[in-house]
Image 1 (cartoon, rainbow, N blue to C red):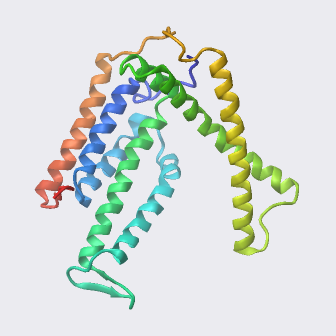
Image 2 (spheres, rainbow, N blue to C red; image 1 turned 45 degrees about the vertical axis):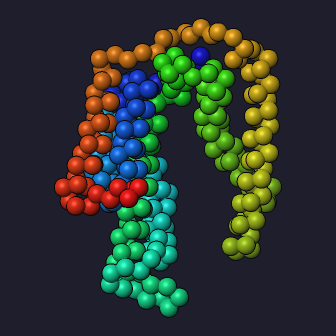
Image 3 (cartoon, helix red, strand yellow; image 1 turned 60 degrees about the vertical axis):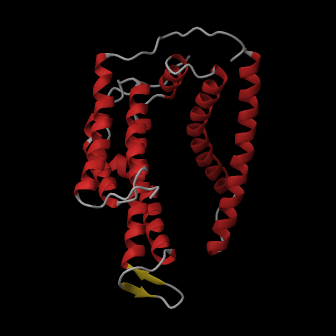
Length: 261
């Protein structure tokens, strides 16, 4: 399998499956409870791991700000739609924001945000080909599934480039956003439709190419074996430590709220 540019950070040199296992451990700890304490621990740990991942804070913030906005929207939506409990903080007439609904919104919003941050770090430091190698060789997943997933991950970057190219082409033809918010919305929807058409064409060509070259048709050989080394063990241990610290902090603070109770 062809490889992309190798991340030279400490985390980037570690085994892809080890990073995926650590991510699963942290995610499991977060989805087991609805509280803001465990989420805060994971958020703090994510920022502390940035030097090991070779990611600057400014770069990291540029990647996660849409998720931060989504978390705020989730907090507000839950606060106004949740059941009223405790003291009423804001009376909007058609609904109210109470202490209980705001606390629930904060717990859900921070949990969603905390789940995203480790994922951004892991996938920013993991080459898709390395991940595909590990999934196929170590987890023994079907080749067709792995190669399809690899193609999808590779195409995501191309789609982002095509979106920029489509925008430049539309502006060069004088088809940019006009007429206020309505015009911008129509221009965005038109550009999104063009990207959808382009994605279907790319997927069709890729599927035909892979099929003609016999991908998944039989046993495969691998240019580079994937396996664990002693240097990969700390990745899993760090993931387990963060998960345990998040659970322990929530229990110590009395905020632990098991999701199925």
